[in-house]
Image (tube, rainbow, N blue to C red; front, side, top):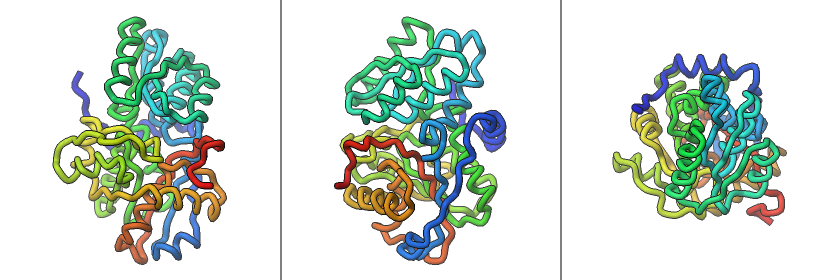
Length: 317
């Protein structure tokens, strides 16, 4: 099946579809981080979204578009956590069963939440091949519908609704930033942002230890993930065909940051803003701080992607 990127109208339709169920999350500011960076920062707090992450948007949009006949055969996906929770909850809300393939090193808090939402879990090794193989086995045995974590037009459209809301609240942003894992969020963000404001800069951020999107952006072809031990567990995946296309077309730059700065920035956000975020969330702000980007006096929107952390295994003491 040939997949095509959604356009702005499909993001608009997705927003109408998910509005009765998804939270319109707040946008917070911080005088501390404004002073530290020299910019005016606007944090779109998807850590307050259902399941504690933006992933609910894409999963609910995709699953709610299925026919009843498709849905009754079940839903399957593979995910390190937040998409897993999103599919588990969205499936249940639509009256469908869900099977989730999760890597063995997925955070405990995310595994427990998936179980709490009623989904069946299948564990596998933390490789793309292992995840895809396990998911395909479920599809072959049950006829379940596979909802890809990011390389899916309806998922990308759903994720783009966070940027839609952010730019409705703050239409004069100069830059909008999001972390990059598989690329669903940055893809939807870029498609919407460039439609609404062609001059806005869309910048992705990645850990240096999981910099496949950065390398892909520079080389012009999809580069493999070389290591999966970054503290930002939500960003350990590689780009898909659709998300790479969106990045090539609509994203202005991808920047990287180091593990120490990610961890320190995560802690600073906890301490200064009094909100719980997971390590992946901290990556865009960490990249701003570490790279000393030329952002003085600019207005920057940052999507804080989620707040699902294992409180017994925090990266800072």
